[in-house]
Figure 1 (cartoon, rainbow, N blue to C red):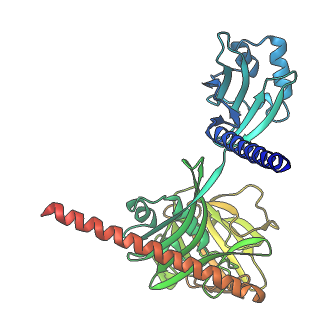
Figure 2: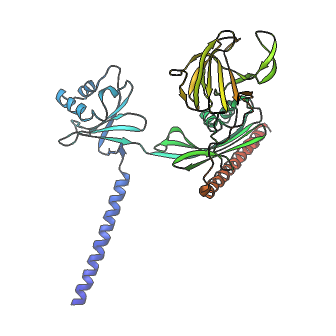
Figure 3: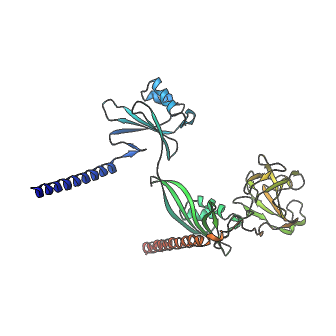
Length: 423
């Protein structure tokens, strides 16, 4: 009898455990198959999408949805801290969640503050609950390579790549490469990440994860590495790509006259030294200081430099920026400036045939060619982190090699298909 009782108890426990397990699995499947929007379970709700019309206020929106003036004020006050009335913009999307009853009841309202960030107003219960919701971000690795025929922008566009990568490369290699002097045959390889909302909506380039740029038969590398809680780019030797001076005081422009001890002046028509570099650019183009320093001169020279600035960077180097249309706000004698800060704008003041920047560098008081000036790196990878950096570097190079092989294979297949069609 006792054996029978124990056996029955065992069967009961076994059945009970299996039943609980099956119930838990069913609940998990049910939870997985539920549909959510902005964190709201919508299987039993209807969702209606709207856009804020010109001149609409929160009160008008809530009144149109059937809320009383008193209830509308409660909703406005409940979300005032997270979403004040002045934040409402024409064209902003908002979404109304309501029951499927014969007389629908609004349960939630959400406002799209951006493509990713939303304000969720929960109208269920006795009090109004307001929270924020962020759509999840996913990151996808991408790769671009190409050879320059006319310009970096055109090379990227020809390969169907995001042309924003041109600005990324310019910012990374600003201290090594003068992008005003790119040549046909220069090439690039870029490893980068793109961010997506819900794995479908692209947000754009999230980060550069490695780059190789070949210019004038010289190869430049950029490997991202974090030390001292700062993410920087380093070359293959572990030296920071950031230098004391930028290669050029403007972004993408054209050199019209170089450094010379004997140049025919375009206006005076006499041969004399031109100890600077002329960059042609549209009037108003921002001019940046190539390094940290202090403005030691700001003036105007009618028969020569026009509006000009002179900056002392340290005990060795000074730079001069001439023919400016005007100066950036706050730029005065004695102003401390940071590398890359806009200090003025391209113009044609003084003795100039057209809008351009005459840029000059002096080293210990002696003029030097800005295009050939070398600038030391700010800092290298710390000695105790060299091994970690080398691992990162090798991983980047391996990944670039794999992607490049895939691109070559795809190009080869494309050419073969093209030849087959011609035959």
